[in-house]
Image 1 (cartoon, rainbow, N blue to C red):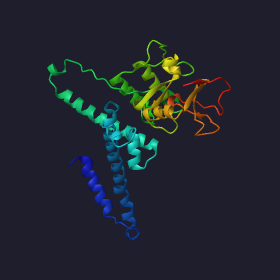
Image 2: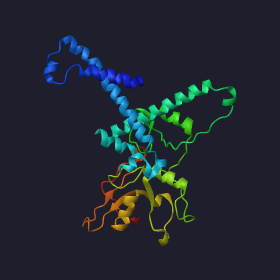
Image 3: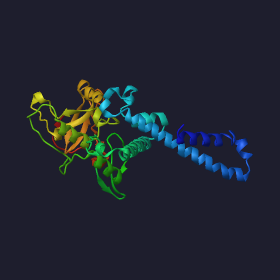
Image 4: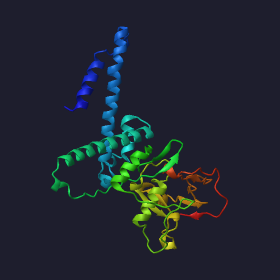
Length: 304
């Protein structure tokens, strides 16, 4: 039994011994009430630790590389944060923080094991460096509390130190945005968006931009401003990320997306809204979110 398991058992037994009703707690002496704070606080702390470890395990078994075969996907969740949120009843932000803590705990434990193994290795075993590639996406910004960033699929901000540690291990991919937030153009040389463009779209949009959708970039598809057959361009400013479900819904139910002054708006079909009121489609990347206009600009729109 691990130290965590033993401590959990010990704390749970101590709390259980206090009683299970208001009457039993009312019968405790002042000294017993004061002493009871210790095992209860320990049980809460240890339970939170176990919850974070479980969240980290869910995240590992739901990593984007696994696609639909990942644990969260097999149970109908778009990402591990949603699965943890459903299981715990936490808010989306709290669940995201729990996942982030669990992932960091797992990575720290792995790093400690690797460091211990390296110390025990012979010189011949340590002459070659091992290259590790990770798909961690982190973005930096400056706020009133200092630099911070986000991991894809999690709304919880992480510290600069955490970002620096991941950059040290995985490196970084720089994506340059124009002042209106548009990166990378290719024109009509390619029908499909290339890998660098998809990375840029993932950084810009942060996932499916359909209202209320939490699908991350790994679950999303690039939708053209205009159909390729209609001389549409495979440029980033004429593309938007939508998950497969909402991409099909857009085409099959005759929804449209309008591009007005650099902002994207959802145009419902008349069967859904007789007035066809435009619906804002904000970016899901917290670092690139901008205030939305209250009213769409009075100009000729571009149809997606």
